[in-house]
Length: 295
Image 1 (tube, rainbow, N blue to C red):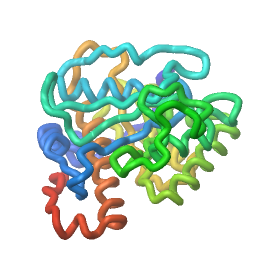
Image 2 (cartoon, helix red, strand yellow):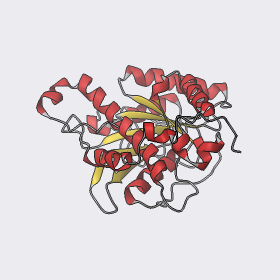
Image 3 (cartoon, rainbow, N blue to C red):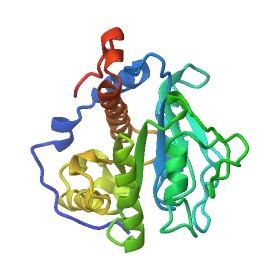
């Protein structure tokens, strides 16, 4: 159900002051041309973590849809008790259909549960982050006896960013057990020095104005409160929350939806580069990166 809320106008068009229409092309060029600070890291592996139905797999589809300039259909979307995705799968995001891969690789896995009995538990999630789990493995449980288990994974086999995917329409009603699981994951991953962000999906389901046009995303008071709730749930800064609308029911892509999705990808890539600059300072001295153009 879409809720009616008050919207501050911020002039004739609040979206222009935050994300102008020209931002789509600028963001697209930045994402396509992005190269990690470490030249030996051709792909930025981003692990999508979150409860069932939050939109993890839909984000993969949406990222590809932006690049292909049409809504992509993949057999990874569905509904099932406990989540549809059961295996660890990585998806390259190409600059165009059949084109060269960008630096972004999205890793989809089983939904996060609230314990070791249901969903992806803490120990299994950390094994994925550290790069021990082979591609295609049906995650949970994980041990060094698993075929293809990587005892000493390289940097490019590890996960370089965690994306907690939460639904705006449910963020205020998630069970306490899920919140505890996400916060524990956040703490453990922080110790590994892996950057973390929150992807807030289904934003059109909590605000009528945003449902009509996502250009009102930054002027919706209700959505701002929802963003704050998402940050509080995982105990992360509000600035780490990126509101987006996935392509789930549309038959064609639109500029404003693309802008939000591309802006989220920009933040992901920049967060990884920030980490690499601290963890591998020598790379910064030998490899110059063209920064993403600011909005």
